Amino acid sequence: MPENTKLMEEKIDRLQDHFKVYKDDMQDVKDLLKKVEICLVGSDINNHKGLVHLMDAIDCRVDTMEKHHILLKDALDTYKWSARAIVLGIVGLFFWWVKK
Image (cartoon, rainbow, N blue to C red; front, side, top):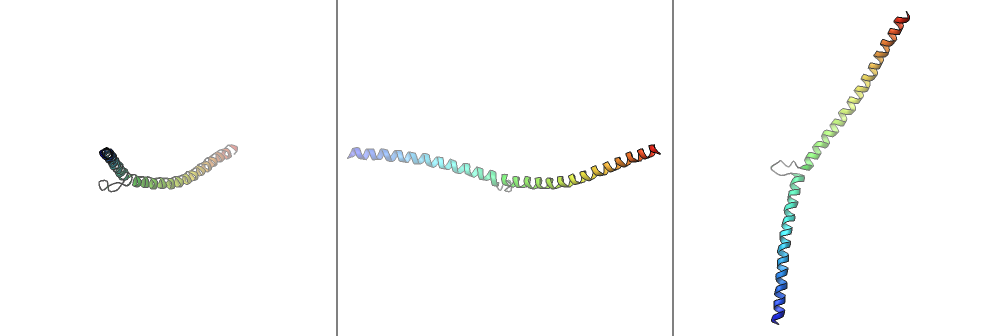
């Protein structure tokens, strides 16, 4: 009987050691998860401006730039056609003057 008791105590000690290590590992995972949350969402220190907020801000800037790009492209097309018309008019006027 004392041998069984000793064996049980050894198993209990091993289990306790295992759970201590498991508890430490879980605490490390918990700390890491908290750091990831702070990185993504932010904290009180940086006014909750984490990665998600920064990505939203960049997305808004890109949308604005795309809208301005479309407007500038339309304006540039208008300028190109106007410049072509002016050059064609000048060339036509030159040929008209030479033929005269």
